[in-house]
Length: 259
Image 1: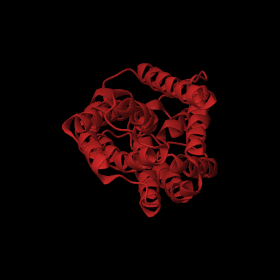
Image 2 (image 1 turned 120 degrees about the vertical axis):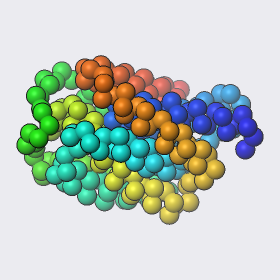
Image 3 (image 1 turned 180 degrees about the horizontal axis):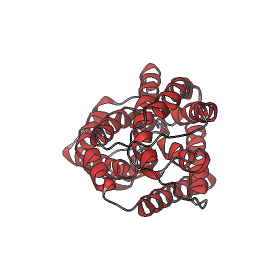
């Protein structure tokens, strides 16, 4: 790789990881289309959908480490929710990550576009903010949480995502989890999911380690900065930022697929 390619990949990783840390996602919803389109548009390099999903899988693992570390003393990491959703999404992501090797480039893009569309619709559903203070007991449907996490992990593992971009609206809309608990806890669940996705992608030989290493460095720098910024922002603003990002990505991918 030449220096221009390295800089472009680093900037994609930095911008995507800062936003992902701020809104509580692993970042694949942002970085998947950025890696797929920006390097090719600038003429520096071109990645296939399989390669992008492999790079994204490894990068998300390190991005979520940085995000969870930033939230470690926040009081919003719910261990019970992490245990139920984390174990289920790990199994699903292992299945999806390895299973993606049997799909075509277009099929991977379609899976990604469907996930993004569902997440965008759910983010725009009106929801009432649930009051929550540090130390409060969190109540949720454990069976429903685990089932939805498994399905999310299976689908997200295919595109090299850890699934936070759809986990967040699921936790907010269906499980009725308070926003700040959702943002912090989803990062931890995403970290667990990314382990399964990464193992699956490595087993399927879909990881380009050079670009992945550059994205990792950018993630470790930017994700904690984004997480700290997110803790100071209004929860309504965070939800709108995430909703608009997901919507824009879904529209872009569907336009590419249909045209």
